[in-house]
Amino acid sequence: MRVVIAGSSGLIGTALVSHLREAGHDVLRLVRRAPAAPDERGWDPPAGRVDDGTFDGVDAVVNLCGNPQAPRPWTGAYKQAMRDSRLVPTEVLAAAVAEHRVPTLVNASGINYYGDTGPDAVDEKGPAGTTGFLTVLSRDWEAATAPAAAGGARVVPMRTGLVLSPSGGLLGTLRPLFRMGLGGRLGSGRQYMSCISLDDHVGAIRYVVEHDAITGPVNSTGPQAVTNAEFTSTFAAVLGRPAVFAVPSFGIRLVLGEAGEELALTSIRVVPAVLEGAGYQYRHRTVREMLAAAVGS
Image (tube, rainbow, N blue to C red):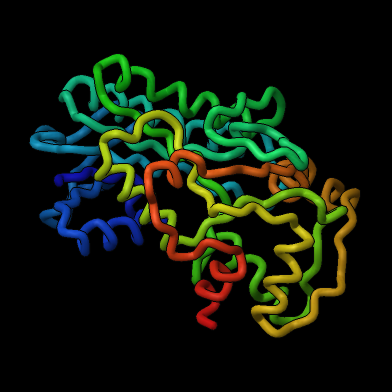
């Protein structure tokens, strides 16, 4: 298959490009500068421009664009940048997919779509949440794919959980603290975390690209969500370090404000019903397996 990837230079995009090529697919990367390699095509999302011929013979477009959700206070400008970095590229690509009759659009989204689920597990049939910046953003992000669906494309929003990678991402922030013995649960520790290994996330994207019976939202998470307390104790055990500290909720809210509430204290317990029902085979089914793979133990 010929696949166009937007956001190919990030943590997930880099891994996905390699994964698809190893599987024998032809991958084209969208870049926001003058193309410098045969596999690159230029585009300018704010201007709504994509190089002519980019979508010729293309079977699928995968859109991974979006600024990171950093653990820092979210100013109005920072939140607007998060919105623009997701919605604008999605709108451009959805219109292009419809115009050029590309059969498939796989578009990044987030499990924040469901809002705070507390202890209750939700699958892809669960309702959208009603409050929270990231919840509203995820809803709007998915809505931006509407032109592609109206044009007849198969549209798959990948509602992605916490991706556990050997470098960068969540573990890039946590690993140094845990190695120094400073790891600990956040708040009560009862909030659920829905994680997936980097290998399985890119594997799930490839699986969706290759299986055209899969349509509509897909939860890209592992089979079993865990509480923050369980995640903390497991990560410490994998590293062979203690995790005796606890960061109080009020401290997280005081330092990070809205970002702390949504990134650290919100409980999102997700079930990947579509992936499992479609027969996807996980490399890492448990959080212990994901963490062990990420740290090379």
